[in-house]
Every structure is written in structure tokens, then in C-alpha cells.
Length: 335
Image 1 (cartoon, rainbow, N blue to C red):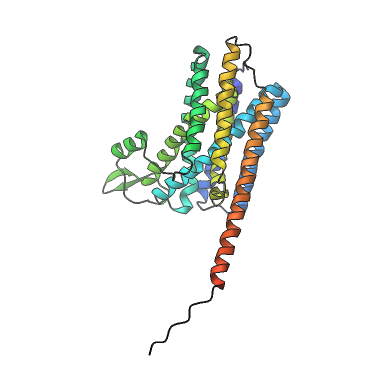
Image 2: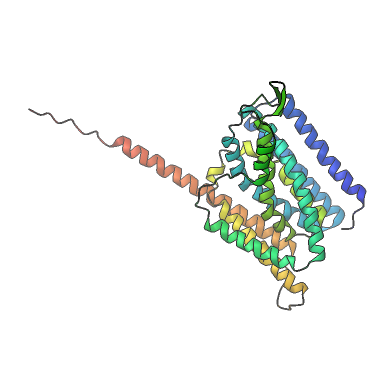
């Protein structure tokens, strides 16, 4: 896709307008959103992404349209898994519930800026060094294996170097002061923990991008599609966080589904690199096949997760009822 500069500027400007309006709404009325509000916003962002993808299908053809949808669905699914860690960060820093929307939104903007730089560097690197496709493919297969092998471990949050540096360099108060990022304390301008949490969200997401960016480059090598797929996936995360917060524990097979997707993309990258290097038996996987495998895997994973959670809930309820029905032991009467 040889796109003129103005298309990039219009696209980035559109994202900025939507995010600015979103930020205005959050700053105007800090609160924990209701289920209905979250459904509306998530539907809005998903609708925007779908409309954008349909526009690509019409204007640029099924190949680029399919690559966008495959990339967006993959990035969105990986982002859902990242919400577990975002929840840990919120709990770790004891963020007041009414200000969590603002923290997530600013953190997501930081993440989007960092990912943009990461995508630009990755796009430049793969145009110069074809062997990086083998590295990306092997890394994704390794990540998939690691995801399966460590799925039973309890998730933990550890501070990265950027967060530790921010803590050490920036004078920070011990308590929150509403939604303010800075406050004057004893005649000195200091930062509040709100800024530290935003840095934690943004930089932690960049660590997740070490998996997701190579994954989407395995589906498309077009920087414009990589960037827009990431942007649409990140923009809806704030409302998705509140919408499925109680559902995360029920998606017990999500890690397995994501590991299958990452392993598939990794193998696809290696095969296509071999095909490009003249290996006759190595096939090129059509983007529509990739899209079908990604959607099918995630759909099956979600259905099986909800079925298992339902069975477990019924089993726990039956066990509780059985215990309630057990007769209490009669007290013994001594002489």
C-alpha cells in the first residue's frame, strides 16, 4: 500500500479526535461506568473498526481488508488477556474506582504512542532484514508454548524499568488528590500516584506488544494496517475493562486459545519466509484461511470456557446444597 502522507495524517487525526472526545467525557464526569454504558461504548468502537475494515474491503480489496480484520481480531483478543494485569495494577496501586476510567484512558494513549514507535521500527527492520521473519516466527511459537506451560501460575505484576525510574526520579505524594496528576505540597510541586499508575499501564502494555506486534506482522507487513489494527484494539479497552471485569475469571481457556493463535501465526511466518526464499514445499497461507482459523479458535475457546464455568458453578451449588441437607450431629449427654 503506497499511501500518501495525507491519509496517514487524516487517520491519526481521526483517532486523536475520538480519544479527545472520550477524554472530555471522562474528565467531565468521573465515575465507574454502568454495564449499559460499557456495552454502548464497546459497540461504538467495534462498529468503528468494522466500518473501517469494510471501507478497506471496498476501496483496497479483500486482501488488505482481510489482513486488517485478522490483525484487529488478534490484537483485540490479546488485549483481553492483558486486562488481567491491568486489573492487578489497579488493585496494587489502590486506584479509586471513580478515577479508573481516566487512568486507563491516559495509559492507553501512552501505550498507543509507544506502540506507534515500535511499529515504525519493526516495519523498517523487516524491510531491511528478511531473516527477521524466522526470528518472529520462532519467537511466537516459543511464546505460545510458554503461555500453555505457565497458564496455571498465578498472574503477578512486577514493576518494569520505566516505572522504577519514574518512581525514583519524580517526587510523588503518598496519597491521591482526586484525579490530579500534580499537587503543590509544602510549597513544592509534586506528582500524585495517579501519574505512576498511568505510566505502569502504558509501559506494561508495551511489554505485551513484544508478543502482539510480531503476531500482526505475521498477518500483514503493511505498516498502515498494523497501526490501525493496534489503534482500534487499544481504543476500546477502557470500556471493555469494566464490561468483562467479572467475566475474565470465566474465560478459563483463553490462554489456550491465544497460544493456538500465536503458534499458528508463528508457523505461518516461518513457512512464508521459506516460500519467499525459494523452498518449493513451503506454502503461502491465504489471509482468509488465517482469518477463519483465528475466529474459529477464539470462538471455540470462548464457548468451551463458558460451558466449563457453568458446569463448575452447578457442581459447587450442588455440593453446597448437599452439605446443607446433611443432618447435624445430636449432642451426647453424659451422666
